[in-house]
Length: 301
Image 1 (cartoon, rainbow, N blue to C red):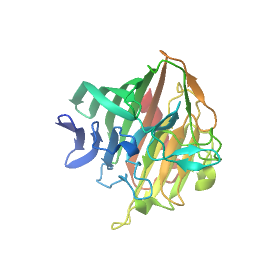
Image 2 (spheres, rainbow, N blue to C red):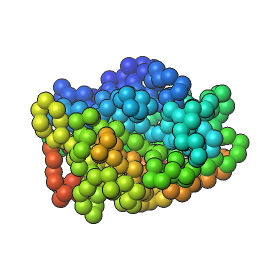
Image 3 (cartoon, rainbow, N blue to C red):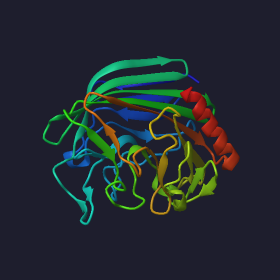
């Protein structure tokens, strides 16, 4: 199946398969400062056209489809909204940084593969440099009902001092270790099935270490199912990660490398992370979801 890329210059790249828009990557969004502006993927659809992402939900307006979102980078909040402060819960402070597009470095569409690459500048709310990032996204159709996205980021500390990457859990909030590549699913996926390599469950799986997690959800209107699987590259720091995953209040997945332990990054040094996200029509069950994870591992090879 041939993929095509439509570039809205200075704004976004939309990737289509046939007459279905698989995703839009908004690399220069119009996002309020308090939501920590950053690129995101939304809408995201299966090959069959089912929507599997949610944008700016009223409960957490800084959730936007899939985004590389980090709540605690030194003193900076690149997640959005208030910052967790132990003993005070969440406090709105002037630390909402931005990840801003600098330059498009790659945009290719060949047969069943599209690759997008760009550089970004991460700055504090006051505008000071914090991180320089090189990022690439590669989308590939795997079969008539499945496609995969490989997300690759290298972040270099340019702040002038060591940056400690953490989460609300590293700051004292139990089992709230979110941060990293974060997916927010549709409202109708609430109550869906979280799938780990060890078996299916729901919120009790949050905090589990695993190389992959999946989410099996159902759509309103059609009653059909879709599955999202995220796979952590074996070379990633903290592999296998603990997972921040929710089903009971809303659907989300996040391989969280800083869930319960801070990772320091000295000035001038870099961190690299790679992930595969597999998007599939249907509920494949436990064995079928494991096969999707295997396809994700192959995409990372």
